[in-house]
Length: 427
Image (cartoon, helix red, strand yellow):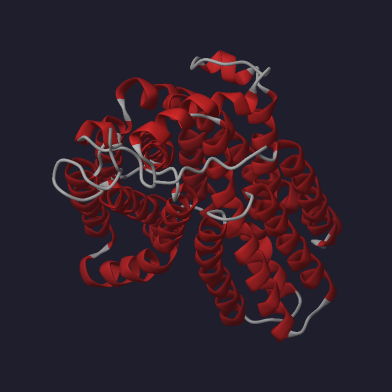
């Protein structure tokens, strides 16, 4: 009997790339509006109401916590209702929150709305779209995840200048309404309703790069990767497994490093003599390298062990910190940005790829929901700790040394959790 090939299905071609396109629209619009627009809005709102920047910035921190800390619950809901349901309703909640920012009059209004937006983005964003990618892709999963993560970072390029232009043209309140409309149309309607589909079986297809028989065999074999460490789909069973905590540990180590650097690198560069424009250019270069690092790891992981690639990513980040600590030359500062950007892009893509290697589709969202809070908590801890160290010592040196130590620990955690084999299936 001729096996069913992944590409043909009802409608002719393999639909997974369209499902991925829907996910990238969701993460691009919601991430750009929720996070990247905030930095542009911050001084405008402070100037409008006379509030301090620390007071207003607290809203974003609260929103990020609402995005990440309930991730185990979000993972269970994605498993229960399917990612398409959570994408649509989570981002609709986020769109309503963005529109609601046009009406704020008090600081508590901003806090409540950003908590709502964070919860909506968490419910319908990272975990749900990652689950869609894992459902649709096996052979090219790492590449699909790399594209997904890279498009999330693209919001940092597009939204700040776009929001700046909108504020000049229509005012900050109408800009919030416009952002809500962008998420509603591109994220919810196009990305969620029209493009996102839960899994290939719903359309008479199987994941990319597999035949029906090979895919079934891969699905049965996948739990063997964690044999002896628990099984089944319940979250409490996953929490008893050593692997998920090791993945969370290396994600947390990287988040501590990035939380520190993203928050304080501009201030550090100005402290050592560079002007604000040079510091901003360095960060822009770093952001571009994050996109390159994400896609590069995704492509290389099609042929190489993702664990080795993740260790190389940590090594790039470690070299970047050493360069930053030992130079004040502009050319070397740009090398720091290239190394840190490529390394961090690789690591943020390696994490969901690791989860996909170890956990089959029915358990993926729940496992990712356990890992994601590590990132949120350690990112916040890194930023706060570095600020406290600077206040006490009038220097970031000890904070950056702590980052280097975390990166070394990250390599160890990757080595301990590295996949025993890559899940690959040929058509």
